[in-house]
Image (cartoon, rainbow, N blue to C red):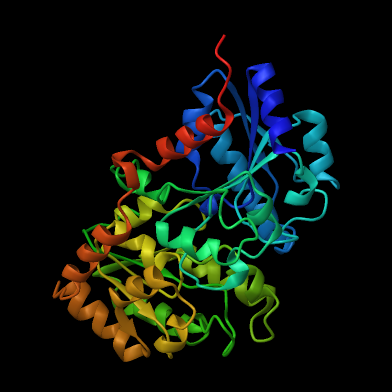
Length: 398
């Protein structure tokens, strides 16, 4: 069926490409979009549809952020957020030949927009985050097996995929991590609040898993939330703090028995309104570039923040459990962090590493960057993906 689609594209001399966007912080393919959009053989659209399993408040916030992003950049987009049958609507208004998904999971949207709905099209996947989790379900899903192209970051990942995919990873292409292109550029903006005097800048980025047990073992937000608020107040003359929660955290807090919608709203608002604090729910690359350090418990960020070369702490009361399901890159990424299991560890990191600049882990971070974060082929990651698309289609020359 993919061959038929490619043949149709060759006959037309043009391919329609749709990138599904559901959450702005998960959008990593802007430079791939730019390359395709600059090629007259491609007609490209961004397709906006929030994740159905997010709360209504968060879905509305996500779609609003996506609209603002597209409109500010004059990017052509199709808004499906109000559609009951978004996949059907997409076929009717655009009927793409190539469909890029941000996540591979089964039933991510619904049967109408999931990858099963686009059988016969060139389904493609650029991971929404750094692949650090060594679990079969990462690749053991319909999309990764049926996709025309799965664009991964490392040869290690391709070998891992080959062990679980029915197609033995024949559809996998190793291109590098798209965020490498972004971090190779200087910051476009300074997203931090203006202060009367310069201050150190620390990002706090908690994961959405807020349970006390389970395979994620990332419950730090529950025991850190009050402490981090106190820390921001204690160092209000020396440090700015940016609260950068996982996009799904708000939804999980709103249904948590000890939080709920009102407490969650008030907490988020306090961080947004503080004189030396701020809430960051959208793009974060410029936030990373202009920061001095980060404290977090997120799998992807345990690798991604190393693009900056700056000190970073991974917080977990059981670091061995947190690392137990990580692949080699994920484990090495966390080992290049300062480790925090209690409030005392976090305070020490803030005072000794960030403020006093006693950064003993820097050599490990540099070595990690050299081993895992340089794109293959001496080209940009976006160019690697663009070349693979052209190679797969092989347009007929006029």
